[in-house]
Amino acid sequence: MFDMFDVMDSVFPILFGLVFCLVIGMFIYAIVHNVKEKRANDAAPVLTVEALVKTKRMDTYHTSPTYDGDGHRTSSGSYHTSYYATFEVESGDRLELQVSDYEYGQLAEGDRGKLTFQRKRFLQFERERGV
Image (tube, rainbow, N blue to C red; front, side, top):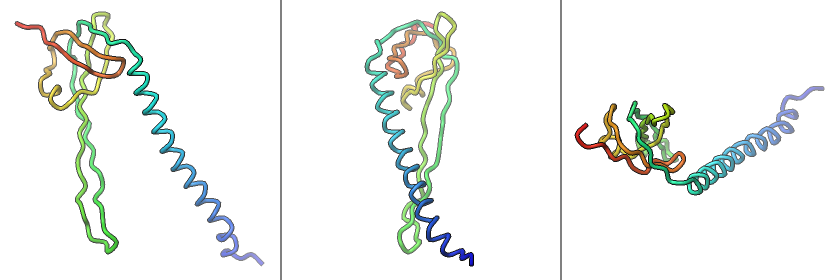
């Protein structure tokens, strides 16, 4: 006769193992991807080009609150903000780079100047004076 508990006893360990492997695989993929990205940035030449600040944007996300073993909230979570600026170079190509909060505050849409970057890594933006 068909017993649901026997099926669950044999299927649950397999499903649990698959989910566990999937989560570990995602962590490994993220680490490898970040290491490759850093190496590619490090190996790229540092370029300085004339550029125009086209747009700026912020990306804000909230982390979940944490709870202790008794169900009491130990933190309310936190907010994290990443800052980005899109630069247009003389050829008309656009490049969106992550910038620090300080740089974000210093940049204004329409600013012209010299952009120094290394592949996808923002290094510096020197505004033209008198513009």
